[in-house]
Amino acid sequence: MDIGARLKTIREERGLSQRELAQRAGVTNGLISLIERNMTSPSINTLKKILEILDTTLSDFFAKGERSEPDRFVFRHDELTEINPGRVYRAATAESLRALSFKRVGRSDNTNLLMLYETYDPGADTGEDAYSHEGEEGGVVISGELLLTVGERTELLRAGDAYHFDSRIPHRFRNIATTPCIVVSACTPPTF
Image: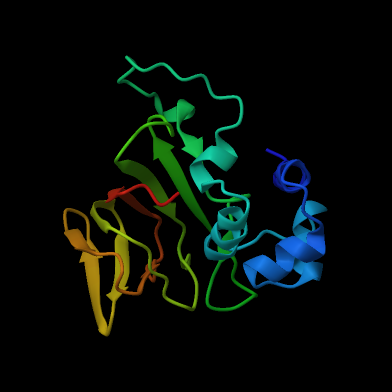
């Protein structure tokens, strides 16, 4: 998906200049320009802030062209929609970039639940700053290890371990192991 072109199209449909969008979203004009030219991949939090101004969710942003089939209940692995912009890369240092993938399970329309199939490469991190959003979320580590910080507490989760918390509390996910980590999670209401 051409994230930059998609963002530019939506911004122009809303009648906003890059400068207006940047000011309302609390980011720099240069960042909007870089994203639209595919010169940088925004963090999930940054893209969410920008899309909120455009009255669009992450799910809707990446679902362009998806057919809605209300009675459908099975979604094959290769049909899951990647909602992490450009497979955003995050790690503790710029020298060790690692992939972080969030694939949405199911449709993006008319749902009260967001389910994700998440993959964290070794060293992958949701960002140095913890983030928060309305609702609650839970998940199960399928394989690997995941360091989860919620508020002031940090726990190491291994395959079979699970979590459930109020997502208004700032939180952060990190794979500090040397192998990939797979997590199946859900949150309500959908935040992506």
